[in-house]
Image (tube, rainbow, N blue to C red; front, side, top):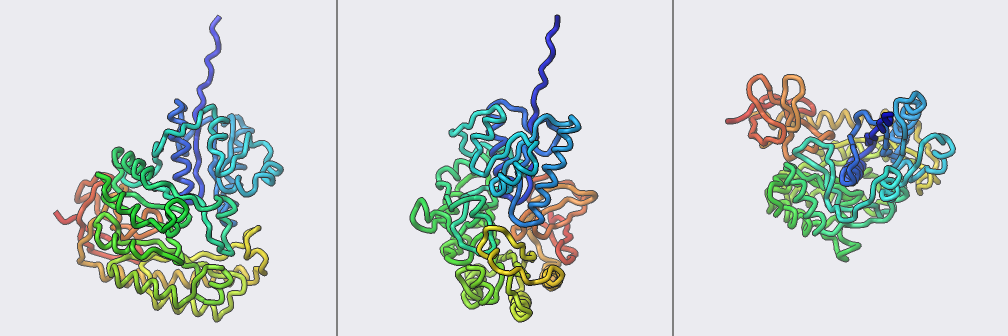
Length: 434
C-alpha cells in the first residue's frame, strides 16, 4: 500500500511597514533557508509569517487587516498556519491574542529564535550577514543599530524596539562584503537613530568610523544614510562625506517641527535656532548635499501661529526632499497624556499645504537640473521607461529619473551618465550620454 505523500511546507513571509522591517524579514528568511526551509517573500505559501508594523494608526490598521485577511484564508483552507511577528505583535500581543485568537502564534521583535523554532528551524548564531534580500539586486538595507534611547513624546518605537543597541563595525563590514559579493552596489544605512551609533559599545559617536570601514568594501559604489537624529549629530561625518566619493551627498534627518514650543513638548532636545544652525553647517560643509526631512503637523497644542512658523520655515529652507505627516495619538507615549486637540480636517489641511509648498520647491529645483549630467543607477523597467536614481535620491521615497527604453537598453544595477532633458515636480526625464 502506498503511503500518502507528505505536503512540504512553503513559508511565505509578508512584510509591512518600514525598511527596518524589510531587513528583519530578510534575516528571518536567511535563517529559514539555512535550515533547509522552502521560503518565499509575498508569494504563495501554505505557512504564512506576517511581519507587522505598529507605528501609527494607518500602519496598525493595515497590519490588523492583513492578519484578518489571512485568517479568512486559513478558514477557507487556502493556508494551513499563520504566525504574526513584528512591532504590532510586540506592542499589542495580549490584545491581539484576545481579539484574533485563531493566529497560530504571536511573536515580538526580539523573539526570532522562538519564531524559528515554531517554524521547525534552528537559530544559527554564526550567520552574520546571511540574508535573503527582497529589494532589487543593486541595493540593500544595512541595519547598523536596533532600538532607540531618545525620549520623543510622540514616538512608540522604544516600546516596540527597546533601547539602542549598535552592531559592531566588524560585523557590519562582513555583512556588507557578503551583500557586495551578491551584486549589491548601494548600501542604505538604517537604524532608529544613526546619530547615536557607537555610543553604547564604543563610548563615542562612531558613525564616521563605520563609514570609513564600509567605503573599503569592494563592489559597493554608493553608501546612503537614513534616519539621523539632529541633536548630537557627529559633524565628522560631513568630512567623510566630502572626502569619500562612495558616500552619497545625501542625508535623511527627520526634524518633525520647528516651533520652539512644539519642539519642547515633543522632547526633541533642540530648538529652531540650533536646528537652522545645524542645517547651515551641513550646507557649508557639503554644498551639493541633498537633505531629506519629515515633519509632523497637528501635534497636541499646535496653534495656527506654530503652524505658520513651520510653514514659513519650510519656504525659507527649501529642502530638496520632504515628507509631511499628520500626528497620530499613540497609547503609552508621553504625548498621549496631552489632549489631541487639533481637529483631523485641520491636520490634513496643514499637511496638504506643506506638501503643496514642497511640490513647488521641488519643481523649481528640478528645473535647474535641465541640461545637467548625472550618474544614475537603474532600479527597474516600467512600461517604456527604465527607472533610475541619482545619488540624491533614495528608493521608494524620492525622485526618479525616467529614461526612454525604446532608445537604449540598460540592465538593473547598471550605472549610467544621463543628461536631463525635462523635469516635473518630482521626476526627471533624461537621455543616456554615451
